[in-house]
Image (cartoon, rainbow, N blue to C red; front, side):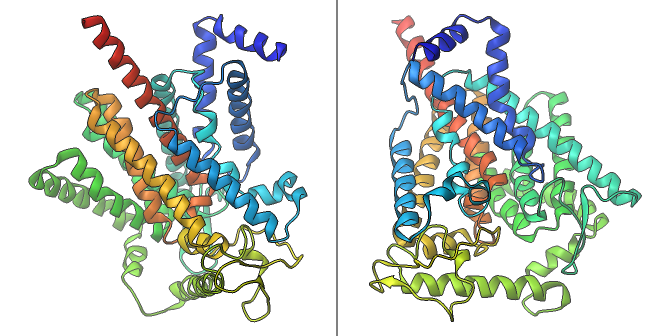
Length: 449
């Protein structure tokens, strides 16, 4: 404890440089959202924030998230998932297995931000400013390099060829194009919000360029689920920004017409048309059939154990619904307890079905309740704030949560590290900013008395 106090006192007495360095460290994961082929960069940045957070928590245990129900629900979710894991016959040693934490158990890693960023050892406003700068710069540079690769055809670092017939697609340095597409969808929404809520002409030009580049990156991923996530989240975002039917329709029209050249020049229009195509062909057969099979498997497993699920992390352990057995009472507590453990990136390709199958109605209900509470808090913050920059942050966080809910219909994004680190960090930082803003508002009010 003496060592902890000494380290904490060092930070408290440190100069402005150290304070800025702390803000930099907290925002650091934003630089690594497109490099999950090299996951240690993200892991080390998160663990570093966790270490600093623990040090400050031990020296001054102050949880600052204004509505503690969020952390309470998340703690309940962690406990419930861990109990579900052990009751289904899985090993404690897996929690020290990097392969498990990276794949089947990555949920536990993805939501750490809510605990780490609840400790006030940094400035939320400055950290958020760095966070968005890191996002816009990184995503723009990666997208530009992807465009260069596509046009030159000389390298294949960020542009890959889809074996399923979709042609070339932009993956950045991520394992899958869907992971890249999901974060490009939310970062494109952020760029649009910053553009709409900026009055300075130079900044409008800058954010217009960033938006165009990020949209190009999004289109080049050829991730149809990401297109849908961006388009659906766009509607409430524009409405909350304008609250005017006329301005809403004008902006939608401008965005559509401005995007058409990008859509046709990149050949993405073919991929978009496939969203509305219900007949199967060579390009859509593999992904459509495989997804339907996984959805059917998840729904069948859920139907066998609807209340508590078959056990957290057990979906991949059942290779076929024709050859397995559940132990317990069908319809209530019925778990898959065989000793075959398969750690895999494979999922039900749908968060709702994934959590229903593994953790039942209870697990999915708790997770949805958690995100609804987060949304509610940030929505209150958005209506409370009179600071235009803060409102930009809050609206971006709301957009990311809406996009997450939509994206989760096509992939298990609620446990996907790439998108979840982005959304979790922005959400928890936004709640911290709301706490600081209310605190500042009270101090100003007291001074005026």
